[in-house]
Length: 173
Image (cartoon, rainbow, N blue to C red; front, side, top):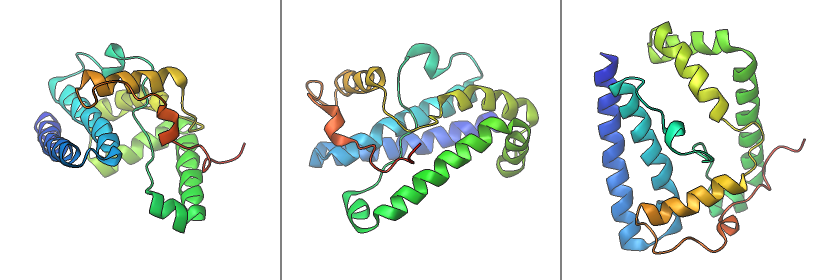
């Protein structure tokens, strides 16, 4: 049952990815481009789960940011404090999950209706991927830049990808 569920999720996410690709081709807008990459990795993850634990994405590509929080310029300008509070809550949640595996897995089992033999190893694979501080790693940004060319989304790597990101709204240490 879970294999079929993850396969269906993968198909739905593939449909969204194709829609975002069409949107990007029509507009060449950076928002559609930035939304497509995480969608691609969600597709990969769901199909990998459906196929079994044969190979994880992290086994193929190192130094990559999979989980990124996006906010529109309108939201940032209009409600910067809400963006800060959201990010603070996100990192509080990640900190809790890292220090409370048992409770996190128990919640995942209840909410996602997964058996423990899937939820626990999934926790072990996913938790190291979540950033604890939200800082962008230069190696991961270089991999992201190369991926735009590899996926034929851009003809060349962006010259300065950091101009499209900000760390202004991260919690202060």
